[in-house]
Image 1: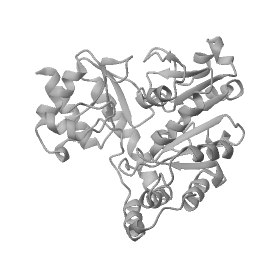
Image 2 (image 1 turned 45 degrees about the vertical axis):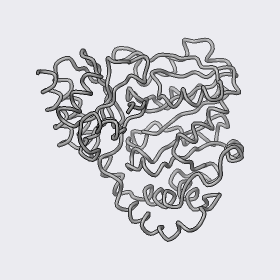
Image 3 (image 1 turned 180 degrees about the vertical axis):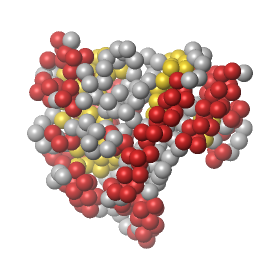
Image 4 (image 1 turned 90 degrees about the horizontal axis):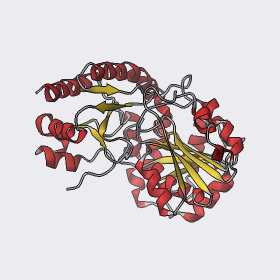
Length: 361
């Protein structure tokens, strides 16, 4: 069985480790260990009787709830079958431009959607650690004359995956005036509390060329339901609706999403859990021989290793039934880096103990 580019392939990991999939401690997928919220489970259960009915094709209740959550009219929001489906629609729009700026290393699905529509891509590499500060994206892009071309698009995730860098809102805003289309994938933005996040959602009504992608997968630990949403001008979203299949979001996912975004207790619990757990994991990794973690604003850490990370991954699976994410799908990183999710402090400690055992054996 072949390892896939995404994390969370427990069937592949279990086959390599020689154990059942549920015995694997998964650090490869950046999913919150606190969820799914009880409120979403209750909402799913309450909707089981509606499996005999088609979903509302307009998703009126879901769009209204998301609109209330983000203080936007519902027509500015389009739910999708995970942000991956919406990213495919983004790729079709970007393919109409002269080129798309892609900050690398980049999420593999960006390459998939851009290649599907034969979009022209211009890759700009971030420098890790001592390189470009997280709040200077404007200076980073501004050194390139093509960034002033109105026929150019920008596809960026914030916080950045896999580095965890957080780009400040003010550093992205100037490009809304200069570029034809700016797409910001904020799949991990909700891990930052409201007073720290750098979301561009508040600007979407001012700029027709701004598209925001959001996911409920990571923060609410619902990857199996496949639910994300786009925030953009209603004309763009209406065009996208004509391109895609009907009923992309099922009744259970729609109900779970409404419950999730209304669960303020779960949100507060998550914002309280992450900073200390992430710092514990960062300090523990930094103390291990041959490892150098990157600082992160998200729920994962990118780690440089002096040893082959494919070898580390194999040893952790076979000896400790722990799965880390190799970075072979990020061509700029290759076998020198791995990424780990931030989990509970007990689980983080189990990973640190296992890594020390492998590294010192």
